[in-house]
Each structure stands twice: as structure tokens, then as C-alpha cells.
Length: 354
Image 1 (cartoon, rainbow, N blue to C red):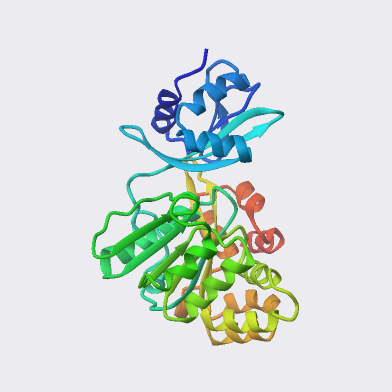
Image 2 (image 1 turned 135 degrees about the vertical axis):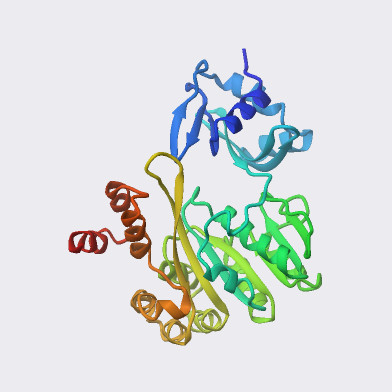
């Protein structure tokens, strides 16, 4: 007999989990502090999961899933919470992943975010990228950045997402939340028409393709503050990923556009804390004159050394520096620091030096 999906999701929220996974031939699995744990429930069949998950869909969504065999959507369950869901198929059976979206928008202070974040959101124009792997807290950081604008500035903020995750209540700012597939055909299409919607700030849920990236750079150049995400692990890696989307004959022009419009790259991940919970580890690059020149001259590999210089004035920090600080504070273990580090040799050398 299938489990009541709403009661299961309510239990997931009560346990403080971030995700729920339903896959045939397994018990339901929840993710707590980054680790998957089986729920003490019977092993599910494909039929069980179909009965559970179809109960949340509209007829239109059912038709879309059956046609494409993939479905992304967000759903609000009164008294339980808001969720981002993905339905897919595995070995012919339906499977589902649910991500819990907090209904309370966190503030930058709630997240203990670096002080430079409050300076970055005061920019009138430019591109701010928050990057990292899936589950690294990108959406939460972006929602806190937009919340800070909402609390302090009178702006029109357009978000384009697939699906819409955090829903902001209008405070000083006005939000236009747009969902691809429901409110607009695509990210690129939404960005094209956003210019006629008088935005001050634009959030792009994911910069997936050349057309979207090009539109984001243009919007950032023409007097808008643009936020976007990429699945990259460092500032140099992010810049290279953007450039590589374009053909060789276009790359010089794109490097110039990035050098003038890129405000900052925040590359973050979440690490398990000693005693439970997780802590954000943000590497921060803020574009200054030296970094802009390196981008323009195709010397991306030299950006990391620039990030290590003059940090007091810019608010920049490398991942290694953040990991060492967390180790000093006994917030994370040495094993986790080395496991998650982008530069384990550099980190090891600094740990041994201490």
C-alpha cells in the first residue's frame, strides 16, 4: 500500500532534512546534514511511487511528465511547506526527488554571511554569480542577497527560475517572479523581454546556454544588477566556463564584456560541522582593475594569486583561507576540510605549517 506523500513530506520537514528521495526497490531516503539516511518504512515499488507522486500533479503536469519523462516543478503544501520536485524514470519506474524550500527568507545576518555581501548588493549594475555544486546552498545565498535589497532599496526585482523557489513578500522592493514553462518560454526569452519591464535587479536561476549568458552579460552592461548561478567550483573555473560556451572568434569580445560587467563570483560549498549541521564555505572574488585586465588578456590562471592579495580592501577570500579559519575555530574536521578542498595540497601545506 502506498504511503501518504503529504504525511511523509511533513515528517521530512520535522526531521530537519533537506531532501527526500523516492526510488523503486528502496525505502524512502532523506538527506540530513549532507548524508542520506533510510527512513524506517517499507521498500517501495514503482507502482507505490507512482500512486504517491501523481497525487501532487495537475492533469497538465501529468501529461508533460508522460511526454518528456522528466518534470521540474515547485509546490506549496499548506501547513507543511514548500518543495522543489523533480520526477524522472529509472529502469522504467517513476522516481522522485524533493528539495525543501524554507518559507522564511533568511537574512544575510542569519547566514553569518561575509560583510562584503552587503557592499556588493549596493551596486547599480553588473553581474554577480553564485556558483557551486548541487546542494551547496546557492539558492539560499541568492535569496538572502535579494532579501537585503528588499529590506533596504526601492527596486523592481525580476526573478526567472525553473521552478520558482523562494517567494519574496514585497517590502521596499517589488518582485516579479517568473517560472519558465508557466510564465515564460525560456530563460533567454524572459531576459529579452525583461528589458521592457523596467527592472533594476534580475535573478537568473541558471545560466544554461549561450543565449542566456549573452543576454545576462548585456543586461549587466546596460545598467541592471544581475544575479546568476553556474555549477562551477571556483572563480577562474566560472569565468572559463562562460568563455568556453562561445566560439573562438567570439571569445575576445566575451572576455571584454566579462571584464567590464562581472562584479563578483561567490563559489561556495556546504561542509558538515562538528556536532551536526553544516557550514557554508564561500570563496569570494571581487573584480578589481588587476583582475579585469587578466580576464581581458586571457590570463585567467593568474586570478587566484590576485585573490590572495589586498584582501582587506576588497573582501576577497580563497577557499583555503576559509577552511583554515573553520579548522582554527574547531568548526569542521581536518578530514572534511581536505576531502572538500579544491586545493588539498595547498591546504595540507598550511595545516602542517601551523
